[in-house]
Image (cartoon, rainbow, N blue to C red; front, side, top):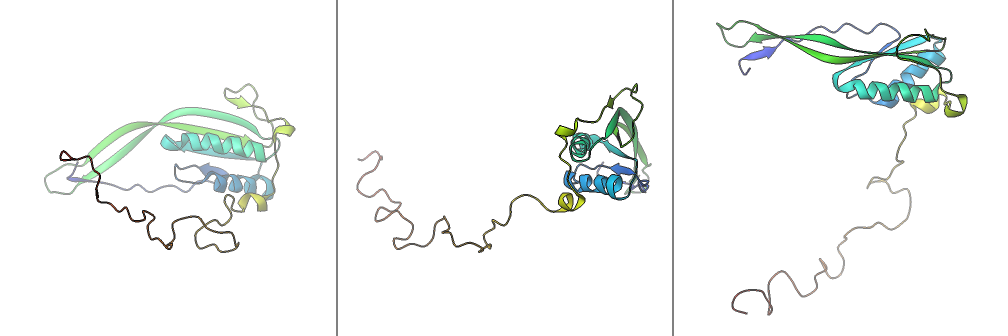
Length: 187
């Protein structure tokens, strides 16, 4: 395939209320977007769609969202999708090549109103004691470690690590050579 180049396809923008999860997107960003749609904008439902490597991230996203927003009903659909890749030749005399492949797809619908409870893949809302509701400001605020980098001099505690002390590298007078003792044949 050295003599071919993949033809880029135009991506259709996602309709409002649909979230297309990618393998590189951050779950926290998706969760805050879902909260914005359902809580701030008053949408009734959102659809999370993912394929390939992003399947696990989509499931994680749905579970986190259900634990942050009260009363979310869920329907999960799993399937496969055919993807057609088109390659155009880089040299004259070659024909264009079309390859077809199948990839796994998941569609998760989260809704504030009751969904079809008889549908395959339906999950009722979590009990309220398992939901820790968080406001949108808190969801969008960066989490994790506060500071902690080498350039962060906000506190006066001593730093660990090798500095240049009085004795240099710490081996004293020994050095790297074998000196008097050794494991050679002549010893």
